[in-house]
Image (cartoon, rainbow, N blue to C red):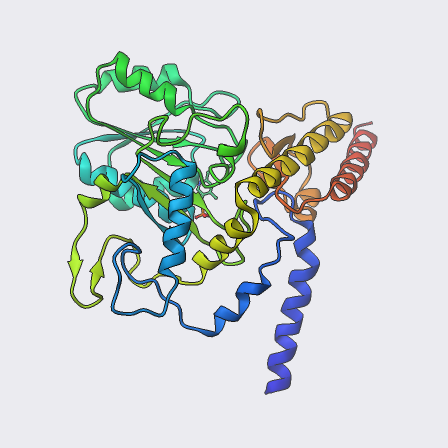
Length: 376
Ligand SMILES: *Cc1c(COP(=O)(O)O)cnc(C)c1O
């Protein structure tokens, strides 16, 4: 029995450790050492309920969770004393939460989002039963502001909820929240809400120069980010930060847990806030900024090396995602590239080495030479 159990675990470990270095297309980070946090896995940590209201169950990490939320609220330039949030199970839950808050504030609103939006948003809108309209995207993946303005103006008697992308899944395009605010002004829209899906690049957008318009000062009402992408938490997680006055609208007190039921799940992961806290505590703003710059450096390297082999390769400004005309299935599988109909991409996440890029470029070169030979 024991032998078999160990063998299965060892086989799985071998498989994971051999395929992990080949992931290029998905936003996973490598190389940061979290081992100081691992001993906590011995305990049943549970941050049930609202992190800012103590619960009667106290085996958890709420204090550190609050510090994590405070750190990001400041980074995202939230108004003093008007921020709130919690550590979620991922970017999708954060988006669900933002849209839920928006719906509670404006039950009659229409939701607008670009066609480059992550697939989970459609599902969330369906769960929440919110009327919604997809807006055209530009070739870069950024929302088409003319189409947005025209479409809103047709429905201008209705409150407006926009889901803005700070880093689309395929091309890492960033919608401009300030431009959306201008549209509200033009059309005299009084009731509006902007939720920012920053799952991919919300984690480092604040470190970019020029700083993209994406945060509370720019006009966001809530922001969701993922914790297992840029931060590399070994367990999927994320954060949602919202204006506190929005969440006060939905707060309900629950006697059983002695806290407020303001979150989507009841029991909540008490370990994931530790991973996030540990990273911000170890790296601080300067370290996180450096982590961003290192990635951008690798992305610029990848873009220029890949362009030599394939001139159509391109990248959005200050993006870690490098877009490549879709190669054959073999390469997509081998390097775990994310792909759509015509394009594939690699993402230069923390821990990606230039030598890996070199290996990939060589492979792409061989693949092209072979395609040319076949063609004649
Ligand atoms: C990854 C991603 C999501 C979903 O986030 P999860 O953490 O996987 O739930 C949503 N939107 C965008 C743009 C993403 O890149």
